[in-house]
Image (cartoon, rainbow, N blue to C red; front, top):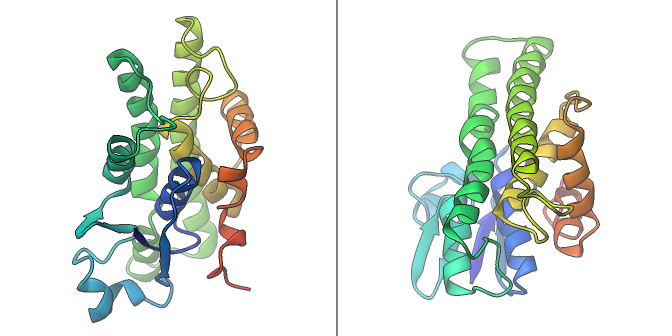
Length: 217
């Protein structure tokens, strides 16, 4: 397998975590988003959308991190990153989509560049906009965890049950983004407890952005 990504891309981090959890080897290709390498002809020949991550496996070129997490689960089911029962999978996918659908699209690098470049927001306004939507989204994640607890469905240190799932894989990179922009996180204690539990695992710690070969000095 080959993984095209960028060290600070939260979606790339999701794939690094999943590959590490499943013990899968891959060749890494580094695509610098600040240098617009994703818009170069070479990378557009791999992924015409000009986005990361891209996973190449067995002649298949695959995109979109949530779809890639499902692909890894279906092709390499051990250890699982989704519950065995349909309701459990639905709960976990809903948590993952709070991150992937409600938060991440609003703090994507191309959106942030548009805010500062086209709309002319200064850094302070840019950061307020960013933290507002990250905080609102994480509060939704927190309330989802509370709802699962009320139903007796958490029962562990992670977002759902006793094992790491794609919900945790999506959550941790989002918290790293929140730290980067100094977003307040005191309103989401359950969520932060999950983050700390995940970061105690090598698959999360060793794949974090600052430990990647393409991390900027």
